[in-house]
Length: 203
Ligand SMILES: C[S@@+](CC[C@H](N)C(=O)[O-])C[C@H]1O[C@@H](n2cnc3c(N)ncnc32)[C@H](O)[C@@H]1O
Image 1 (cartoon, rainbow, N blue to C red):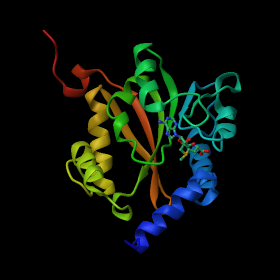
Image 2: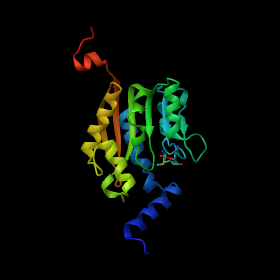
Image 3: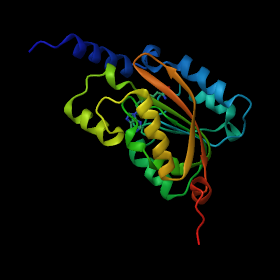
Image 4: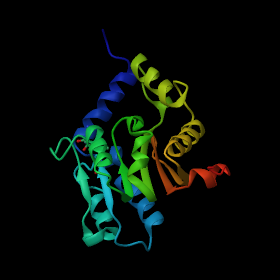
């Protein structure tokens, strides 16, 4: 059966991803956002999941403690991020900056990724559901995480805020950069006291 135009375009995007093409990775826009948010911060503990060939790592190094960034990428055999973040939680690691830059949806990191941060920043790549070919599995996956198979940006941001609160982190959206087929979301994340947040005192 002949492929639809959308399916062919999808294949073209995949091929460009394979070759680290700037038009699918958008390093310039991502770097601009990182620099805008981190500005004069230094000596940060930074982890990059899906670090790829390091388009963002060089920028993060400027802000990192001893200029060292913890980087994980399956293709480079430095770790499967989906599994590894559980290990880092188990080890009680904490970071000032977390970068989540997968090709697909980052949903599987929610809500537990917030356990890795007490007071810091998170940069998340989120594909726009409505520009993608959503098969039944992806639709179900999105429904599980966002309550609907084709969530809007607002719904996604509201749900991310709730996921952060599952672990008593307040999250504030600092920036959303539109990258065509995806958004890059920058969050400020801070641990809050449940009693203070809810105004309820423990007896
Ligand atoms: C969007 S690219 C990230 C690019 C990188 N952040 C950059 O700006 O240069 C996604 C990366 O995720 C990697 N990847 C795919 N599955 C992975 C997994 N399960 N764990 C870690 N990395 C994975 C791919 O090898 C690819 O380099």
